[in-house]
Image (cartoon, rainbow, N blue to C red):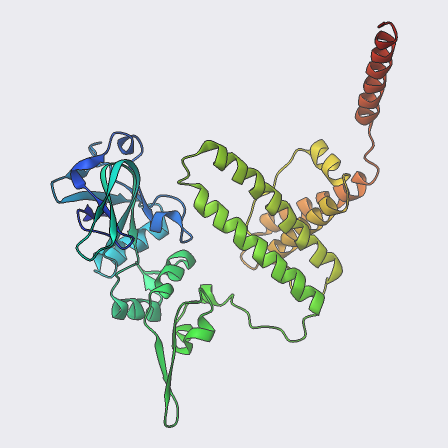
Length: 371
């Protein structure tokens, strides 16, 4: 599972930049020679491969007019395997580099526009991209919804739909086209595609006209926050600035807490409606969780949201009896924690308050002797 490609040339690119191949610096890239899909910005944030050969040598070569690289694809990632098959079939052919300019200048092109000539640059990573794919081959791949004998994963599916050709639908005396650009809303884009899709895509639900307005509002807010969280997670992987990464991590944690609170608000206010869904892991030790619950209404709602997720898992058909009993036990434990947290003003809190009061008294006594 390897493929070689030209990843950069001396041609002027779409944004008016010209990377000089001989100026490519590989010292830092060699320390972590990852290969991504669309720079980690299309739902697949983790690397799909590496430019390090099985013998441990960096497989990137530089000439006067181009930079070439070989990628070895992960054999443990379904996304990586499916992207490799797209490349192997000639459907995906495009690549892109992410670089840090080290030395550059501006020159005028023959057409009069300014061109940024990057004479020396550092390769950060390079990616395979869906841009430039064979549209007819994409349509056939989407229609059968299979790659490598497996249903197309949602992330790969989203990338392919964005570059797929319009689907023509004919009526009496006229024809219309619908552009396949809305990720995962396949039933609105192509009825033929949905009919041939696997059961993994059957989770797409039509709008329920009987859904209460408040439930719709909460669900919309939840979907927006979940989308922002996913975008931040996807964009954080290649970040080079630790301060920015730390700041985004803090914001991400806060947004995830608010999303969980919305789950709880929805579950407590509309118990007869389908629960909101989100795939995340939450964890805390017992005492910290009790204190967290006792902090106010939002933490309370977050735990109710977590409980709703558990109920959804318990109802899954593919669980073993042992798994079902385990999840049921966890749900009961969470219910007890919610009840216990209402009276969570423990000896620890009292001891801390007593220590604080003692410190205040001592500080007051010392300040009283200052002239």
